[in-house]
Image 1 (cartoon, rainbow, N blue to C red):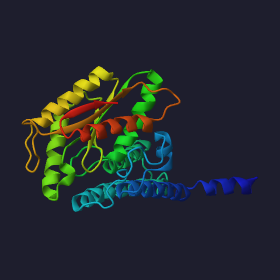
Image 2 (cartoon, rainbow, N blue to C red):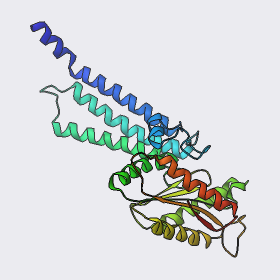
Image 3 (cartoon, rainbow, N blue to C red):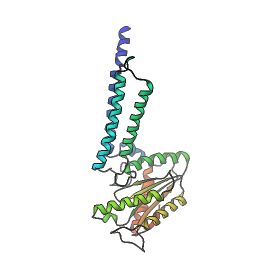
Image 4 (cartoon, one colour):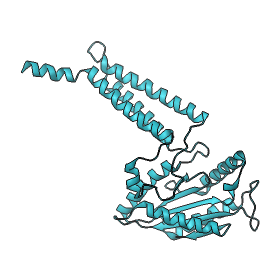
Length: 285
């Protein structure tokens, strides 16, 4: 009996606990790094979306490489993370009556580490050029809002759009400047805090509008068309004095058996139909 008790105590020493924590943290870091450097979405996310291709074909990976500023930011976050983890492990390993720390201090260290994890997770879902969410972040938010709309039996709106002709730009700086300018206009034109905007692909944007019927989605789509149409960009040929914008729109109240990938496909097909008209049109799915 005594030997069994000693064995159990040995298995739960601070050193053993710290080893388990470090292994768990290494696993989390591995997953976060995988997202940050642009691996494909996890299989479970694909299953929730309802399709392994996520519905749009060809634009579903994060950038394969991080630029210099992204690398610097990620290193800073990782350093804070490692520092806090080191404190937590030290607290566990020195948790005797003479060298121990209070539960409050341990909790503070744990919360700081959790903040770092959330910061890294947010970083992996952010588009470095525009500051908006990237496609990975959009897909995760869509799953959340889709499930909420299904439960509440509420409508969900989606707007997918792009400035016509931008995909033909050969000058990368001009392309990037246009994308940044559009994203800034978007952040001003999307009024509700519950609405969610993202850089959908290299040349396209998406706005997700919870609890929004077709009428409300059409108002947002028209506002986007007008406000971006009033902008002026080099190398973009105007149509009737306006910058041409193609917009696809869908509003839908999801049923439990439905998958969000079908919702995305409807909006994206409407967007492609709008592009065929070559300028400043809104097509409803």
